Length: 477
Ligand code: 4AD
Ligand code: MG
Image 1 (cartoon, rainbow, N blue to C red):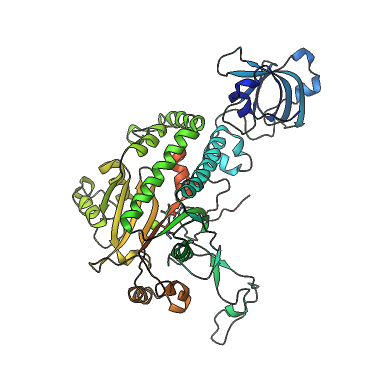
Image 2: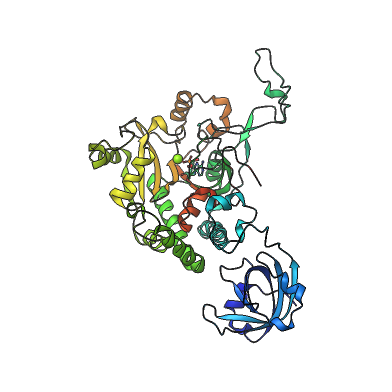
């Protein structure tokens, strides 16, 4: 008999009274009668009721937490509370045993740190099941959002010769023998001998190539892995993460903000509409977790409320200069509580962003028009000559979720920027040519996919929203 998923069994009303087969993993077995099975299709377990007397003893002994089993039987309205249907088992087969003494996931609460070391199994827990179903749902919703609005997905290269963000935090790609590297006359590594005949790295962003696409197809987006060798061991940084980068011809910075805000609202609404069970589970999990924290550190809104809040309230929009003014008039500034004093011309620190988003506005904030000095070379120079048409979106509890800008479309200004940033023109000749042939206003942004998943799941460490995180000194699995 074909397998019925647990999700189907509990949602398709016509299955009640039918004989079905369920396959999954044992979560608990109690009173020699009730087996809770989960197959990953939903957060919900199904209860399989067995007649203990009819079971062979060695089968009974193998119904352990973590074992893979198949049960056949009639799906009936549940007698007990807590579930709508259950299965009256006529036959039970052990597909894969699990030694209860060794299985690390006992039916009790485990710490996130412990589960990170068991990343090969942690997806079998309720929390990680919910997180990774939501991660999938967000990925699907992103493609749907853009497809419905006439965007084309573009696959940009993962191996690249350019440093789009100019931050110099790239992983080298080479086939050279590191023990015996070819050197040129000056003693420098002779990259002409390398696989691609030049220095190559893993990409930090698909943006530069996406711009080429937008200047032909109008509206494009990328959704791919990006790599950054920044040695920051924080709860918000990964060395390998996924980024979504829409790029739109003829959009200016305001159109860009509107698109980004609508996009994030849509994704929060999608999670509420399509992932209700998982959102409810994660909300309840968070509420329990919060009770163990001091009052001051607790969220004012729970996960469900935060998602609803995003969909219903406009984001605050301020310029960098206004942000600095607010910070300079703030209590923590006057009481010298900031570790770094905010000052026009230096980048906003996490503590400044948190103050603006979590204390001052208590909502998402779009900060625009940053000083050119600490933003990337491709951002459009504003009339004041000091700032660029950049925009960052900051979310409560997450910090920067989106970074984007209007792009510099004027060839002469862009060439001057390359010079300022020490980017040799021959490295980006193809990028510059689009400013020579049919250049136009265009804009785009990058959404950090894991930061989005943190937001919709309420998880507080980015390592817990990607199946196998890559961070400094850690690449297991
Ligand atoms: O602000 P970033 O560096 O912008 C870009 O890469 C542009 N090329 C985007 C564009 O305009 N097309 O990165 C974009 C987003 C950040 O806002 C953040 O959400 C995420 O990517 N991000 C990271 N996420 C996880 N780990 C890291 N190390 C990240 N660095 C950036
Ligand atoms: Mg950024």
